[in-house]
Length: 351
Image 1 (tube, rainbow, N blue to C red):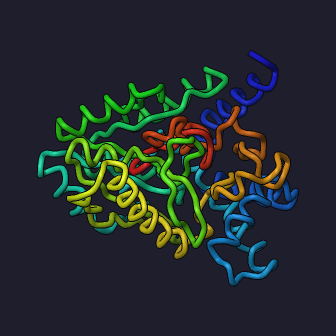
Image 2 (cartoon, rainbow, N blue to C red):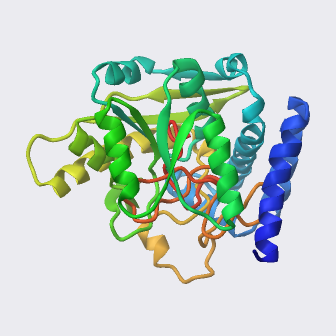
């Protein structure tokens, strides 16, 4: 293990062991302080966030974009502080802190016995939403995590999510997809963060007026298993995290598999866009997303890899606590390190 790997693993370990012991107001203040320090440095991650937000809020001028990016970094660090403390939260604390509309869509999908795929973007705290599903709805679920370096850090994130009631699969070729399909055919729940995919197998969608690629996994799983695909959006509202579970995305009755996948993925992207446009400050997308940005020279603002909890780089190619970008773009995964990293299936909806 390199020195950088040891440092990264140590910082995350200190977060889980130290931050979770702090009084909640102290942890919140610490998160805001770290966010403001990172924001003032105007590093690549902050500049990439502003560039992404400029597409979401095209009418915003430079001053407004700076305000949004500062609020975005504070939201991002809130995610981290909550995630470090989440294993110690009681079901009562989770219930008090999460308000979700449209829960009946999830229950109806599961009651139908054909399973449900919950797909969500990097909004607010998908890990907290996942904890809400397992502790308040009372339903376990399966998600996927990209294998990250160092391996010890990957193990930390797997243990963390398993402690919240999630089944975490490693993203390795088609093996994860097959297991997810089996879980769905048994009537289970699969949750994937699915607003970013950099692989050649991703599906191109129109996203805020430009082309982006998103994982095909949620749409393919819905087609192959008959599970209902439910987009979810999350946002912070004061001390509470709110969310909405949208009605199921309909799979077209006609067309090739790829044509159906494209239609379903676009509909999911449209649902994501509505939530992101309404709450841009809670969208933790600190990496390149749109295809024309991917073609920009390496070294331009916002190269891959986003800041970790204390403004450090996330583990190789990852982005942050949950939600990295799925490697072959087949499923999307739940990334173990920071919104926007290498795995996009996080859970609960990602969370």
